[in-house]
Length: 102
Image (tube, rainbow, N blue to C red; front, side, top):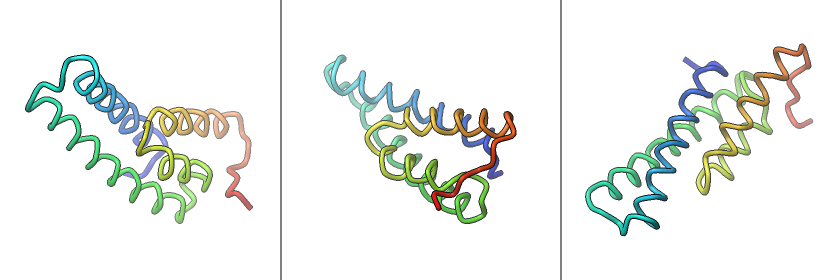
């Protein structure tokens, strides 16, 4: 369950939902219940992604840097987390070692 590929998929889904929230909230005039559903889903996914990233960092599945990007910046824009997961996957495919911030 805790693989880079799964994190990429969930992070992209989270980004799409966050984009829906921003569109509903700022462009479409806050239609209900769409704004509530997008906001609630974003909040729940943020908490799940945060917990999963912290566990994955502890198990060395993802780097501490990636986990920190998701935890700190992910609340305001999950796009950075998606980018960081893709970047980490590419680094691993290139054979670069996973850094843990040390």
